[in-house]
Length: 219
Length: 255
Image (cartoon, rainbow over all chains, first blue to last red; front, side, top):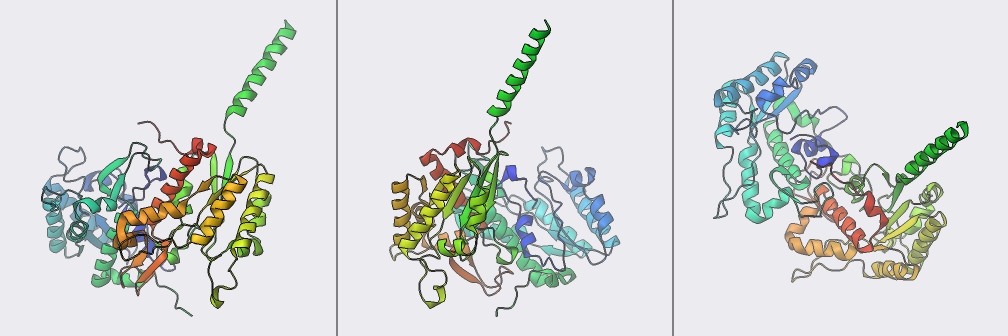
């Protein structure tokens, strides 16, 4: 989701592509997502409090966590209980400022089994996101499900185009090459952003449709 | 003793100077060309010129100035006074990467204002080369990146035959390094195949992209992904020509 530093290119967060969908004449988008963060570490590192401070009525907060919460060996991981409580906290803080929180299930990882079927790597934590969205009555974007469908449609081999897969010598930032099945290429990031865009368009939380880019009418 | 001090002081100054001189001078790479190279506005997203991802391949000693502009041929690029400011700004050691052709070769009444005959195209390229070399800078020719056009049996077809040939002739005659992006890009499209190569271009279904609400099927302009893969091909071709510039390609900080 996050903005990447140039040294990490072509790794691309879907937020970088999503920001291109926004009408800059009436909207400002802040992508404060960071690699490696969980619902817990994002708060502990004081990344959330400044967002809350700056929230104004009618602002929209898109929230996607899970990748780092669900890996129990990571220090920033959270238990299922903590994960739900933290998501509820983000929602509560946003609502307190009359902003509109939107929960997003985590984008799928590229992990295919021997039969060429994609594995459901966020099964438990995505379900928790759904549960919290339902309980707190907030809009839910099904990025996990939709991105799994996308990866499956590309298949085991071609889905690597969506991810930061580089051959040795191909890209100066990764001289030894790279096979990253979590982080996206420009293509994958754009496809993820398109999923989020399509879902938001149809659900229209906070009248977000007024804030998408509008092309000038053709002469 | 005092004299000796002065001498050693002088020696230190000289050592410092030679150290400073051994640091690579800062240089600028100028990109001149058309819409397939240029910086694109947000209103055209996802359209991306290959100059955009190419610009981040270099270390801090290199500045990349992308002067390419959509719709321009060699003739209109000169006519609109886009070349002269580059020629004036060139310093020894700078580079000029030039990729034109798409608009030079465009024919029909609609494109009369930009069309350039192969003869004039050749003259204009030679002018860019001569004026670059006059400033002790380095010209690099780039054959025009291919359009997406496939034969029925899945071969990527040549779309710039005549103009790419001129580039190759000028490269040989004037001994200018050449990036054969036309050939390399066709190989790339073929590796993706007729259908999947659309992922490299500005192709989208209606409703998926706010910039192109009715959908778009553009076989000339690239997506962010396509532009980066092309920039990587340009870099790879630079290795064939063994350009000095390669020493300035970014090296990741050791882990």
